[in-house]
Amino acid sequence: MTTPTDVERLLRELAPQILASLVRRYGDFDTCEDATQEALLAAALQWPAAGTPANPRGWLTTVAARRWIERWRQEAARRRREETAAALAPPDPEPGPAADDTLTLLLLCCHPSLTQASQVALTLRAVGGLTTAEIARAFLVPEATVAQRISRAKQRIKASGAEFRMPSEAERAERLGAVLQVLYLIFNEGYTASSGPALQRVELSGEAIRLTRQLHRLLPTDGEVAGLLALMLLTDARRPARTGPDGALVPLAEQDRARWDAQAIAEGTELITRTLASAPIGPYQLQAAIAAVHDEAARFSDTDWDQILGLYEHLGRLAPGPMVELNRIVAVAMVHGPEAGLAQLAAAEARPGLAGHHRLDAVRAHLLELAGDREAARVAYRQAARRTLSLAEQRYLESRAARLRPAGGQAPGPS
Image 1 (tube, one colour):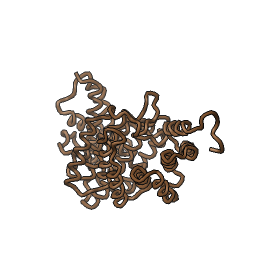
Image 2 (tube, one colour):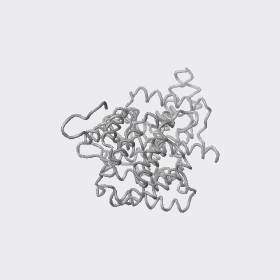
Image 3 (cartoon, helix red, strand yellow):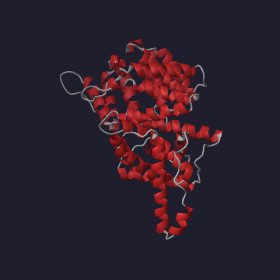
Image 4 (tube, helix red, strand yellow):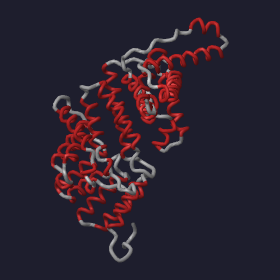
């Protein structure tokens, strides 16, 4: 007998395919999504008891198309054109073709006319199958805000005159970059939440991995798609050891590596090794290679920091950015000593994207601690704690500061 969990997993996988099939046929994104959701709801209610049909995709496509036709007829009736509408209504459809339009749907959700926040929300809703409430909970924003983003996104796509078709090769390359960035943002928000009480939101990082796997199946020779999937697998493999029993953050150097997901590490390492040998090197592949070096070290002291520094220097030339620079400086400190890292940090701290960022203070604190300046490190940890919006990171940074408090009393001076 089909369990509700099996049904939920299958429906989440099929949802973007059904929606894409309807949008291709009828073109109205908004109405197509409503019809798809009604078909998914009908399946969720019927399949656990009656069993999954032999052709679940065909069943969903037929039901969703009929719901669309019903809505089309109702709209026509409201315009008092029942007889004309009945004559012009499309016939009940046959089950949809076997072609998977998920990539086309992903590219449409990442249309260049949309803001990044709208791209993320629409991708999670239309392709990920998450409800508006689930997206709102994941990003800790009001449900009405997410609903407005999704509604505006659909309106913008409609106003832009975008058609449901695979873009030209040049357009696809541009849009694919946006798709990968959206999936990367979703994963990062799930792996290290930017705000709120929890360090991780597993439902988001898991959804990002699922969608990236799907994209990799559609584009198996694309090096950056493979690189992003490998990066997610190699990073998420550490998740079981990233928090203690009380939910507190455990830094990489202190994690119990026996708790890391060995299967995910093996899959990610094999994928990035094969990709680096066969595809032009891109930023996601380099980040995956860095993650692989970390994961391959049996102990933190075994980490090949020289190799990591070289990879970050390559990444900084290929895709410079504030977080890349910050991580490169950490690698410099691990190779050449904390004083060398602090000198480069002082030179970089005024750059856009780093000035005032809590991670800059956290890195400074860590390097000061390594250099033996406990009081300055304590002050920097407290500063980082004040600047982060993540309660889990805040608690961790405060605990690091407390460990550096002089024994036998309060620490001197302001903090």
